[in-house]
Image (cartoon, rainbow, N blue to C red):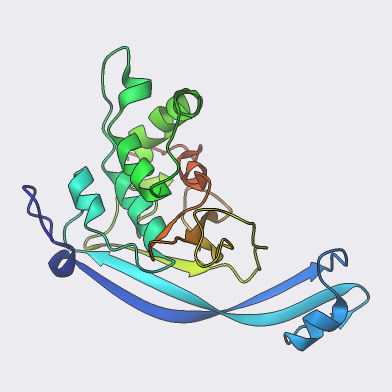
Length: 238
């Protein structure tokens, strides 16, 4: 699918999937899971703690051309658990400062995030005003921060072709009842992580499988992605 910008997802993006072994250890919360249940799942359990090396799914999106409009973002298939985070990163990359007194409420990037949130949830004006100034400050220099090669030392300049790699969290997210979930009112949820040089910790969004078969961002968790990050540093001139 393409529009007036000439972006075509099938032509301009390659998605490569794989696995990454991740070591985890945690203190067992016996109110939510028993030691025997964890042992049955393959965890090593000792002294109230569990550990294991978990194979986690990964996905790398590589773009020869980035989406630039809302219609471009809508052309990214939301048919996998990784797609909502990929769409969020692409939406962030479209950010441009918009002058005017109402920009905190009607910036076009909100339309993109509403779409990624799914057909039920929309961002209200209280939420918009709450994140606007953080987004304006962060994305003025960091809108490409999640792409490979971008970091504070090079003013967040990405490599080309544009690419980033996401990994599924090894930790289980308990399901919550929801009328928008799939199937039967209990959402299939995942936490999707991305590492980048703008923070010492990974950023993430939670995603859920909707009744329409697509995956969407859960509960506006995309807001983690537009939080503050390391300020860029100017290169040294000799």
